[in-house]
Image (cartoon, rainbow, N blue to C red; front, side):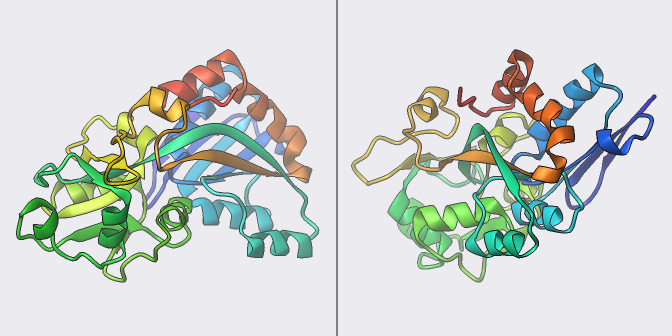
Length: 279
């Protein structure tokens, strides 16, 4: 038996090989927010179930969901629910999907450590990300043009942030391929701001970015995306459930992996990856 791990641009792609059997060949694609967690779960699942072949890749929630519609995935990890257009597409193709919500996630707003604030209110953040505020001077006193680092439009996190803030991202925002690229961009940009999965941030060995505490109103208490208790009590503004969509035709071979996520070991991996178990 062999285990191979490949890092592929723009997304993590990991494959565990065993003797090939189609009914035990599981392809998992989708959310870049969830990809590191999916890899950790797959590694432990494979160690206990070496008869399976697993392929795990990121690339965005939209990509994972699209892969279900053309038969290129068995599980789509998604940091957002299905859109109406996606529901219509699956209905047209007579593809029945089953939904598993397996964890809760927080999205961190991060800046370069050069930026001299530790918290920000939702209204001000919205004005930064939609381009209404273009310079850090009125916020921090620093005469620096703001550079925004975000995700592409097929990202569930991109859609989530827009909906929560009720904005459209500035056309000047840089569209990056995932958490790693956003982190790298902001690390070297003294005026950078962007968003990454809190789980990814917690598990990064070389952060060099600063997560901001978020206030829903100017008078509110600021809450950190890394505050486990606050998120368990649903007090952080940018938190959401994480989804897995599975075609009914793939359910039997996907079920052992889904069941593994609900075991004590699976829950431990979810917690250690910076996410929150729902039950």
